[in-house]
Each structure stands twice: as C-alpha cells, then as structure tokens.
Image 1 (cartoon, rainbow, N blue to C red):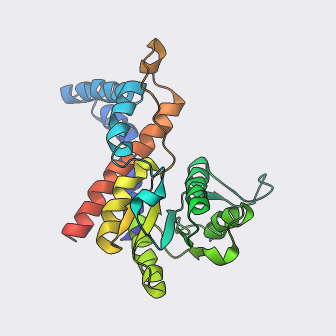
Image 2: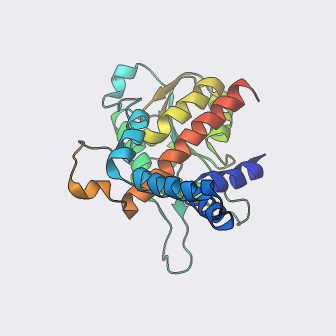
Image 3: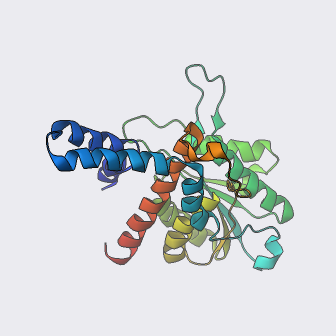
Length: 255
C-alpha cells in the first residue's frame, strides 16, 4: 500500500497532471473537448502558480494552529516530538550531511522549546524512497540537535516510519514505553493540520507546536499574478498537504 501511495502521489501532484492533460489534448486534438481542455489546463497553471491564489490555498493550513510562543501555557508535558522533513547525506558534491530548509526550521523550533523547558526530544521519521538505500536521514537530524547543545541522552531517534501516519504509530510506541502521555508536536505550520489529525487519533494528548511558518503579511503587486518558480514549489507542497488530509481522513475513518 505504501508503494501504491507513492505512485498515486506522483500522478496527482504537479507537474504530472498538467502533462497528462496536455497529452490528452495532443491525442484528441480533433475533438472539441480537447481544445477546451487546453484552455482549462492553461488557466489552471496560471492561476495555481500565482501568488494570491497560492496564499489563499496555504492560509487555511498555516493558520489552523497558532505558534506556541510560551509552552508554559500548554500546561505540563513529558516530551517533544519533532517530525522530520528531508535530510541531505554527504554524497556527490555535498561535503557533509545537512538538512533542507523545512527540516532546519522544525529542528530550530524544537530546540527553542527545549531551551525553555528541557524535555526529551523524539525525532520521528526515516527513509522514505523505497527504491534507494537508507542514508541515515534520521541520524543526520538528531546530530543537528546534539551539535546545538541538546544532550545526547535527551535525543531519541525514530527511523522506522516512512510517512506521518507511521510516525504517529511509532512515536506512540516510544511514548508508551517511557510512560509519557502529553507531548509537544513540532512540524511545519502547513503540515500541522494533517499531523494533528493522525496523531490525535493514534497517539493522543498531542499539543500542537507549529514552526516553519511561510506566510507573512499579504501584499499584492503586479508581478505576483505571474507564475514563478517560488510559487511553483509552494504549490506542490500545498496540494500535497490537501491530498494528505483526504488520505488520512479516509484511512482513519474508513480503512
């Protein structure tokens, strides 16, 4: 099922839908509906790659949970769970291991919360791509926290999970093993609704502590309506989150 989900994801996420729509136009150009489909494809690409539309799509996700500025207001808790994003192993021209922007900002938020109130940090997430060998992605993330000053004894790596659903299952095992109940859940603000949906069901007593916010003050300018590479990257992640919400809601309620 995990492999099937990865293939379905490729078909549903940009740019594959645009390519499939354009292929249909080429194959059936003599049909009236195909020429209409070309116009629809063009309008969708322009709209979804414009700044205002992307902002409107991301806002409901990022605004769902407010940042936990003062964790004392959350009451008592036993641990901090931070979900991984992408780690970059040392290979090719990369001289030493690193993490992507989203992973860095998630770890930074977990570190900030740890400095305010020191609690064990569970770093949840492992190798995702089933067609490539493992590259110690989880260890790379854990090492960042240790280099920043978190004692090694307070960093617990969980590298078995391949997605957020599995992270909830594996994190719950660790929490239960240590007798921990309430915990702060740290991930990107846009990823938090999907994470809370599944963690609240499978690893109860999660407290949302989102980081990695990307939406600042809404400002419009003439160039914002034109497609650009920055919006294209954000659009991919935005659609991915909405598809993930639908998928997890289905798995929790009907699967």
